[in-house]
Length: 148
Image (cartoon, rainbow, N blue to C red; front, side, top):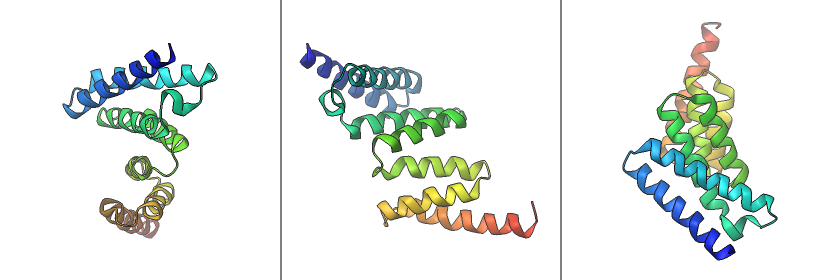
C-alpha cells in the first residue's frame, strides 16, 4: 500500500510539473495542492517525509504553486507558499527570491532585502538576486529621502 501511495505522489507531482511547464496553471495548481495534501496526510499518518515526499519535491511544489498565485496577483497566498517552501527546505534559494520580489513590490524593502541577502548567502552567483538587491537598496534610499 505504501508503495502505491508513493507512486501516486510521484505521478501527481510529475503531472503538476508538466501542466506548469505548459502554462496550464489551473490544472497545475490543483495537482500541486493534491501533492501537498498527500504529503501532509503521509506525515500525519506517521510516515517520515522522505517516505512519501522528498523535502526537495515538496518545497518545489509549494514554490511553484506560489508562482501560480503570484501570476494571478494573489500575493498573500503566494508569500504563504514561498514561506512553506522555505520551511520544508531552508537551503532552497528560489522561494526566498520569489518572496523577496513580492515584498519589494509591496514596498516592504527591509524584508525584501533580507530575502535577497539570504538568496546570495545560499547562491552567490544568483544574478537576478544581485540586481534585485541593488534595486531594493536604491528604492529604499529614495523612499527615505522623500520621507514616505
